[in-house]
Length: 188
Length: 136
Image 1 (cartoon, each protein chain N blue to C red):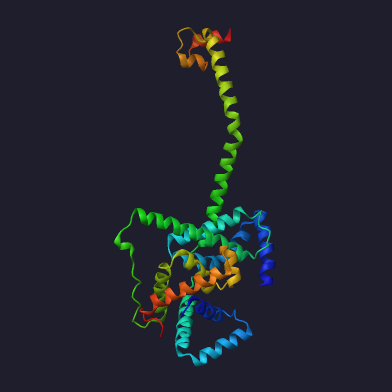
Image 2 (cartoon, rainbow over the protein chains, first blue to last red):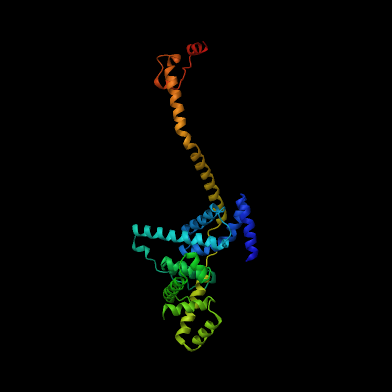
């Protein structure tokens, strides 16, 4: 998207100069991409919202250092995925401290009432619950590769792992997802 | 099915196979029923993942981020002032101690019966006599 890259650069320059409207325009432009990453990793809710905000705050703090070597979307995704992995690590530590059997959530039952929008939303919940059961390392690969649409090479660069590791984690993650979703009657 | 075979299927799904690899894969699909079933499952899971893609946070996200950045900027300004003035704190304490000692030495000016705090802060009692003494 060369046109967007051009306008990104102009908005970044304006934001650097203290233009709040330009910063806001960048946030609005990249909210969908950051939300896809963060919500895919953490599920919807306060924690995801907080990590989303933190992603843009970190970006703002490093505005002076941002040289535009990577596309802004990729740069933000890198921040978002790292913060999401940190949040999952924190969540794991807290669960270990306050563990209860209630934490072992089964995926919600899909709707059978036929209302398309509600059914789609419930399908999304079921998929999210299945994603939540993947190990963070596998989930990160699935989110970046299958939801965000990054190539194997880009995903490897974002996560700082080998391309072969991306492919094997993706294969295992997708296999686990298939198994989890197979019983949910979502395919047809 | 092995992980490496699944990797090939995933590469096919995401369009990363070369033309020749794609040709081999399609031939295998045409002849292998198990592979075809796996391929269909994979496509369905991929479709579900795409459908579940979130494209926003809670409403007014940009406003909340802008407010957070603003408040963090104000906090960082306060931190910067603290950082700037912290080295001056020992000097300020020394000046206050010097003034207090100097006031203590001159305490007869405000009366010998003045309290300790009145003496070190040179707190002159607000009386007509005190006004007269100071005026002299």
